[in-house]
Length: 405
Image (cartoon, rainbow, N blue to C red; front, side, top):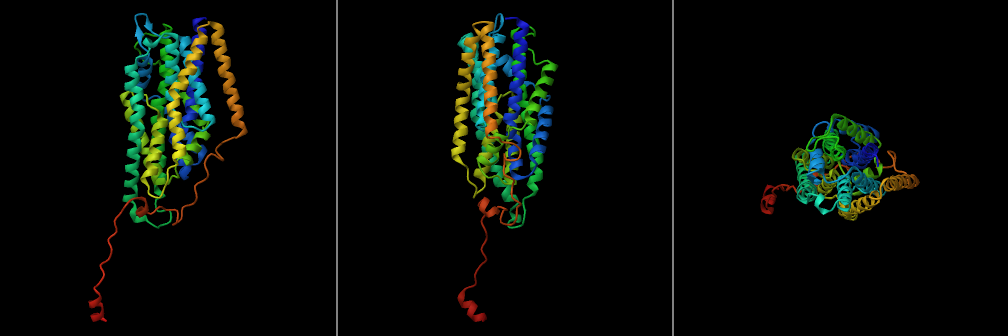
């Protein structure tokens, strides 16, 4: 197949994946402020889109991990071809679309890695994948990051209710956290841009290196950064309302103080990981934070059935996307006709999923039920949210009471 044509196809599919990443992961930043009424749904996704765009320009460490880390470089360059990268993207896009249809906040990052690794193994062999980098930069962060974010969110929720215990019983006593959520959710959106947009930058850069159009070991070109930033921002603005519904109300009922704690924990974890070049899943981190905040407020309950479905999706993402990527790689080995079959199959699945989603439409109007106006009964008393010992007044002895009488 003509090299220029396949490179153009890969770049187009990579940008579409970036678009799906945007609408798939909008919930990570904006589900909780929408659920608590801190921001209106459309305003929230617009703000997230702008900050994703800005965040994409702040760092390229994660892009370098993907373009020059997971897939090994041999004597003749990277041990993967543009055709195989195309096959890997097919696996990632299809898995993203399927999980979006069911409202599962699965990892777009792991879908990308799974599809790419599956295609590389089928097309080149096990030796094409650097499993040490995969373990160090992808697998271990996937285990550690959501747990860390959950613990931080749990502690932050406890602390928030302890600090504001003087507001117990007052109408909307902790409503100020809604304003804090505007800042904290914006920080998550910015952090998401610094991490997730780079993954597509890394894929396009890997394609250009594999095609001999860019020297090995170099980072993404400026036009790649701009294109990926715009794609993820447009995808974010489109909403991803199905997953917003799951994270906003499906895991636990969220109060403003909890939302602020969860978003702060999510942003801190993602920004630290981006700085270290860890290509972690922002979805996993956000889900861990929401669960941690739910556990941190006594009287709230975590819906473990939903959490179990999400965890199952996490476990299935890498192998499922890898299998689809492997099958796609087997097809592209047939030549141009195989690439055409892959492209038509992916397009058919995407169209089918969009049609199925229209039967049960979820949008800004019905994604999350509007938060009730908080009165005294709606304000979680800190005594119920965290254990706070109350000093009981000393009772006078009965004998002395009679004497005074």
